[in-house]
Length: 570
Ligand code: GLA
Image (cartoon, rainbow, N blue to C red; front, top):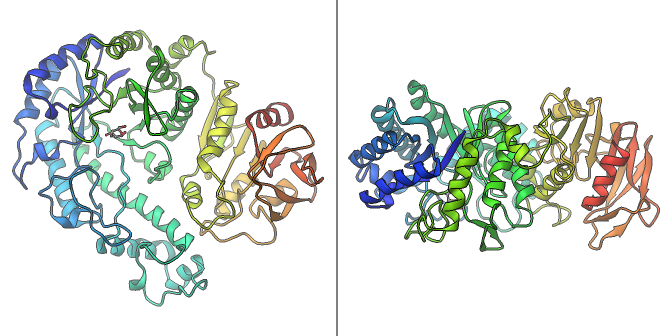
């Protein structure tokens, strides 16, 4: 079990490093991530390397018995980096250095400098005894709309669509006179007068994820000869720029950064994050790469964690199978943009509640040898394989980040959270699955929100023989964001035995005939073989059943969804 955090010795004088290692040993820390944002210290001028300080840090950590997750520092290029490497916004403005994440993965000069610094790290530390794994970059997610990006996008589109004709068709460019007569006319979605074309934007999001993955794979190829596993940390939350299913096939150790959004929901949020990470890992090792030692963010405020919460949130991940629990960061910074971000060693120093809890957690983790050990500490029954799956699709989420929707209340994140939360409260083991996953091992599959779906994936889901629970605004479009015609939800209406001819978003909650509370959305559902199990106040079908296929045409509150899943569908 790995325990530790991001360690940024470059922010501190060398005397502090000795204290750091002594305190790490006291806390039971055995792994630290080093160098994530240290590019300008490693390479103060182009091609001029200064690794003396890092040599000493690596040796010191090794002497202290602490392993290193050594980072490639490419998320924060130094000020000397040529302007061409910095990203251009959708308005055409080039961003300036002075913060972090100003990089363009399409820029040849950035790619070249990225490869050079990775090669230097491999040559210098590839056989260092402290090296446990490589940490590529940090939270991939910057967008760039420069000419290099446009060129790469066009090449990607040519591969995806083959001909301009088929791209025009897929993007419905007949709408608003957007027909392209040459590949050169196609650009990234730039700032324009009114709503962008949602199919254009969806392909752009797919392309960006693939392009960042290429940058990751560039590094991975260079790191491969060292034989050490390669990780990268996923952002967790609504800033979702990578297609986690595609990425997770390439990442050796899946790693998530998780910062709960409120103290009341932190526990179930942690379980949600852990189940997603475990599902993305699909049997490979995974870990909680970052969390905050003393704080939960809530509406822009940083609230201290209540006593014991630090351990509880960590154990949630271990209970789901995490092989490591790390924090951002080891020592709280004195200055810089995140000077008020907590550390395992807070500004007050080791004589603090946070550090005492950090040490206690180190002892607890040191004594646990399995996920069930953590489950026991949390008062949970031993783990068992999941029989229930929730379909998760980043691409569906991207499609819901569009302004071209029939209601502003369609919320992908909340739909996923709610489905998981209701199962979590009953301690039901649950996996997340991609829309193209093999579903044969599950008894029940939930599709809480999946607007675009390809024909092949739709056919696979329709053929699932177990209990299928589909919620509103799923299967309504194809993979190009084109509406499936002939009544909603086009991809599933036959299996569900229904046909919807009108969406009726609602503002105020309503009571259904079975006592359920419903809100956000309603529909005119016509029964075509299904029976209604709950009706709207006007008598229309709200929840339907066709054999073991259920349709929920509205947003139920948690108790009502619980009743549906555990009383009706059970
Ligand atoms: C992210 C980043 C870290 C740090 C934390 C602060 O997870 O990876 O570098 O900025 O957020 O919450």
